[in-house]
Image (cartoon, rainbow, N blue to C red; front, side, top):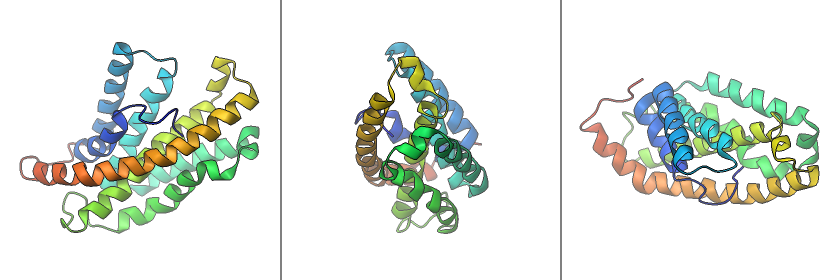
Length: 205
């Protein structure tokens, strides 16, 4: 779920951070970057980004290293908490379809390629697109978890009706954002990773 289109350029960096730096350094880099960005330009929704963006980078790093089990645990825990909440049973299912699709793709994503670090250039766009999609959806899932099961909506004194409207509107933006991230990853991420292969040995963690 997104709070407005083009909310932050960090979402386009999450796949590269996770793949190049590895899951834990990627998480740390996104976390530090998120804190610095919100310090320079504070927003009332700052707490969502500094947690969700590192989770997106972490998921990409895990997938790139073919570690699907920890990510499945994250999805199971957050989705379980969402559906256990009254809002999760009230809100339309279509609003989280990208999250459910990403959940189904986690395991196949780790079996479709040797590793992203050795992937043939012809298959790299497909692999990177898949990892990028799951990464940005993990970011969205974390925001959903923070908003509803973790109860951050109460900090803003939002009524259930207001949360419903924000959630539905955000879901529409989120689907567009998913597509944009995949396109940017293919157009920019593929040549960037190919160039970095020649000068760096990655992941770093």
